[in-house]
Image (cartoon, rainbow, N blue to C red; front, side):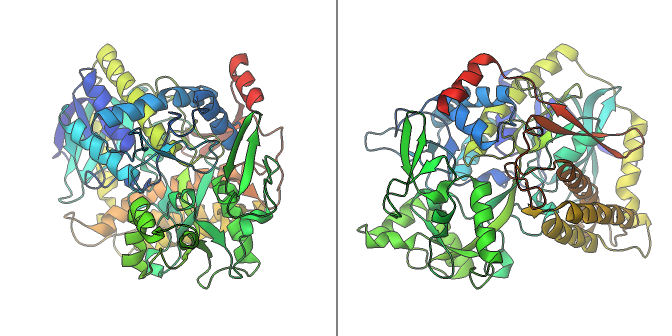
Length: 603
């Protein structure tokens, strides 16, 4: 254990997606030396799966759009549980971050007069998503990587952080292992930024790839930081359903933004059956004009398929449960119907949705220009995460910052499509700037060698055990349990069973053993992931049991209505000194009058 590699940086960034790379660029610009650790390869972050676009009120397609409308849309989509300061900063700063990305080389789709083109997306009043076909996240990562590597940063690929290292209450680095060789690495840093993404692999059906095991959430929790609102898990309405090997892979909302419609097995466009009061009919049931979205003096036609994701997902679940689903347990998403009204529709679809066309052609042998897709809800995003200061992104632990999906606050009870990419840019930048400033002001702390030794022994413990259970059985059991009992539709009874089951799995995980050696050993890696998976699963279940109402992405069949007494309360998770998980409820900070006036005006 005394043999480990040591790396020193002013700022250590854990995660190399959009938030991590933007933080690295910002920290470098402040003069800090930066190290970036990524669990997989550089360029493989889940940001590339954000295909539809980046939400920013640039107003290129509809000049009525502005930051005030974007702010109100974000707050309404989050059921007003959002951190209002984060929502304000996000709406104000998103346009400049998009223009900055363009200046760095991002190639956005264009309007006829050469400006950045924007498309409709769920929950947004106006066409707001700047996009690159359906490969926006990929273009963002390409641009940030190309720009970032020239600003100066050390990148440690295929490296997983096990624990954060502390000097008193302050974070001063991290212990990690190299996934290829199994070597342990110590990172000494003056500030740490968590940008690790989500928790999707705690569920059976997910759009997330294998890396998304809740590492950042758990690292922060173990270090003493607060997690908030972990009950809010977004189930994206449209993931692939067939073949089984690709079930859950994302089908971008851009398909619906470009005219795709949802139909059940009877061919009925069922989204017309459940329109919230905010939407009024412009025609009886026209598929051409859709429904008219009315809020204050704003008026824009949008199809019901572009309602918020939680609403669309529940409508799909209803069709499936009532026996009107597709052959493989989903519904049909049809973009091919536009050929009836558009010349050269196939070419248009291939141009606007190239990734979706190739994804279905290669993985499902289906031509989306001719046939409908089978889709169904898939675990996609967690709104809850590390509690951070809105302006600086620092957590409740000094020296520990968080940005992107592993940080909480901006999205409240439900995230609007496209807000994730602008979230990464706005708050990745802020996290990098303030982490660098913290590092400069506070200097280096001291690493506790005893903590390193203890964490290292725990990391290697699965090799010492003989005859124990394998890690995959526990991971699979957890995913099944979370999918079935803490999924889209929840009850207190189901979630309590899940909570009991999580404790049993935690006991089993303590006895896991692995064979072989440390050189690229997937079984060992999975064994180490179990702690994070079980931690975030327990946080979700405990938080969801406590919130006895339905709000945003949290829907309880035994409490189907909103409870206004709960609508102002954040659920706060902390680690008790005895190691158990503690939960409290705290009222939100009161919104200033000028922001309340914006929301009232938009209502």
